[in-house]
Length: 188
Image (cartoon, rainbow, N blue to C red; front, side, top):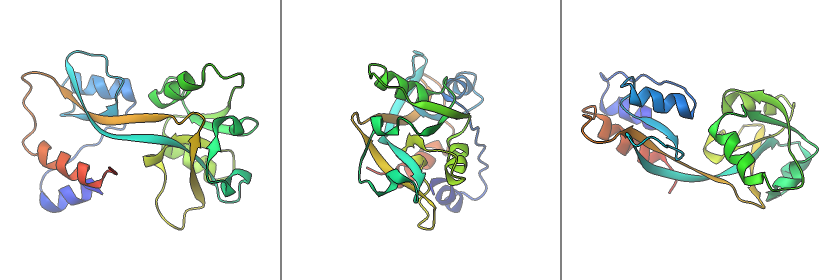
């Protein structure tokens, strides 16, 4: 993990993590509460620079014993009829999904609504439904009872990157070092 490696290199530098949605993350950077943020590429403020880090597809998260778990690929339409666990309708991830599926004649059943992707994984693990989430949000432990399957027709992707103040704002001294560690841990 990037933070762990950074801590090994710089054990005396404290890190504060603010778990926020897209808009709150941008606001934290704008008011200098945060040196930088990791956010989706829907930044609309001219005072903010966005540097892409990774472009990732959405995947289906379901239990290994779910009927869709045996498939290599799952079409979005195949999710119809299942209870969906999703982040709030105002979140960047949810808005992206709904925007990409807006012209489809079918609708997903967003049965459970949560604030954080990690909460949706807990509900999936409990067998309460399935979730569509960015691939990087999936657990990577081999013992996990949850499997991630690529979602297609259409393939929906999000771009994550670093947001920071444009022009003239001084970057925290060790921020470039942290960003190098972060880049080393992200898939190409």
